[in-house]
Amino acid sequence: MTVASPSFRRYGEKLSAFTADNRLVMSFGSPMANVPISIKELQEFICSLEQAIDDEPSIGQRFAFLSMKSIFEAALKQAQRDYDEMVSEAPTGADLEEYMLAYARAVQKGAV
Image 1 (cartoon, rainbow, N blue to C red):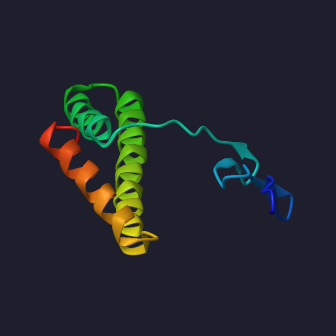
Image 2: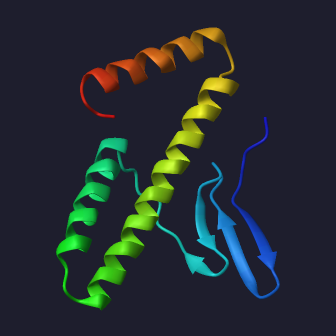
């Protein structure tokens, strides 16, 4: 049995690092946060930021809100890619069925 270990990739002077289960912890020398956030929260944050951007008179604050919105939109797109990967690459039919049922329950409960 092979035990996974952290991995490191160097791009010139910049380092990227990944945990044993392949979570990104440093990207090109910048420490990264891996924070679980629900799809519903992302959608709510994006809507809230859209309103805040419209209401904010300060250009600096508006720019910060636009940056946050872009990050949340990118996270939402990544979540869609992750979903597509889970659906297309589930190891077994039973795994796919279980995932799809859990996803459908989440939709019914308003979590998506």
